[in-house]
Amino acid sequence: MSLLFQSLQLKNHTLQNRIVVSPMCQYSAEDGFANNWHLVHLGQFATGKAGLIMQEATAVVPEGRITYGDLGIWKDEHVPFLKNIVDFVHSQGSLMGIQLAHAGRKASTNKPWINRNQFLPNDVNGWQTVGVSPLPFRETDHPPVALSKDAIKQIIQDFKTAAQRAVNAGYDIIELHAAHGYLIHQFFSPLINNRTDEYGGSFENRIRFLIEIIEEVSKVLTTQSLWVRISATDWAEGGWTCYESVKLTQILKNINIEVIDVSTGGAVAHQQIPESENYQVPFANRIKTETGMITGAVGLINNAQQAETILQNKEADFISVARGFLQNPHLVYEFASQLNIAIDWAPQYERGKESF
Ligand code: FNR
Image 1 (cartoon, rainbow, N blue to C red):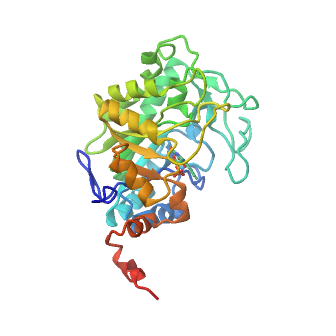
Image 2 (cartoon, helix red, strand yellow; image 1 turned 90 degrees about the vertical axis):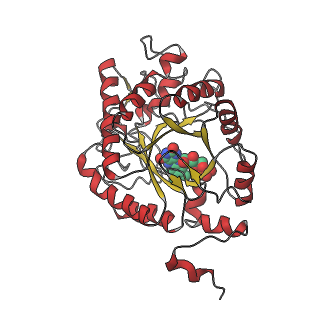
Image 3 (cartoon, rainbow, N blue to C red; image 1 turned 180 degrees about the horizontal axis):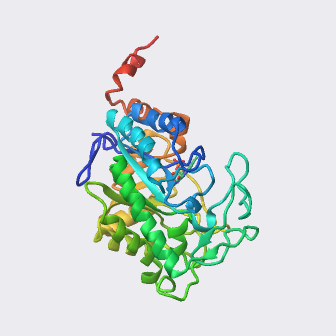
């Protein structure tokens, strides 16, 4: 009996299968606004019956964008087109998620297909970045301005307002991006966070920013499921560890977080990542086993049997795929065929099952 094609029941939502489209920045927005690119890009995964589509890192303030082309949700005017996307995805039976993000010191970079360099604050496509500390990500980067306590409080409110807009747009899942070296992760990592106030030092202090965001965001939720994506390790000496990820997840479980989405890395440029098949799965497995939290695994999961085995071994409750969905937006159909499972396709596509 396949687990991959079993539904996943959350408190208020049901994923029709356990295959999730991992969030992927498209760097194709202007002033944060979604457009037809995002509708077609995200919509094609819905016509392909993904259980959940997690929209790319969507900035809660303009200076929280990785690039000037990132999606945003910092003003009410962003909502109508996002709602249009959400409505289409729902019409196809998939759930729709939004990943709320602030890039902190890793913001203000160019689109990756041009280059990955950071702009100077006075460049037309750049701005002054902020961070947990004045330490830059790369030595060549312009140093971020360390956030004052007032500025921290403001960003927490920005997450809350963004979450309210996400609720208005109809998203089912709201995921807080606490991974890949972006702002929330910058607070976690001792390699970046050298603060001496209540947001730095001890484990409790380093996770305080996330906890305060969760407290505020929770106030505006109605039926939405609140998720957190973390990097379970910094892959660097002295950095954030899997032990701390387990400890954090135990706390999150008691404060309204329903799912932990387990990635790794991104905090520091000198990280050493041993990338290979399933390389992040052991982290998801440990967190799931030690906390009982609903857990997602991601990273180089590229075929159906591999995904099915992860679920059968109880290493995770669902799997997310990013690049595989860019190669084949209807990857769910392919996974079903690889496992010899009959699933309904979109009726418009059913004849695609006929041989020539
Ligand atoms: C990503 N990834 C990513 N992760 C995230 O949390 N938020 C994001 O917005 C993005 N953006 C993004 C863009 C593109 C083009 C790629 C390829 C990746 C990371 C992604 O969600 C995933 O975790 C990794 O790509 C590993 O999964 P795969 O690609 O091996 O299936």
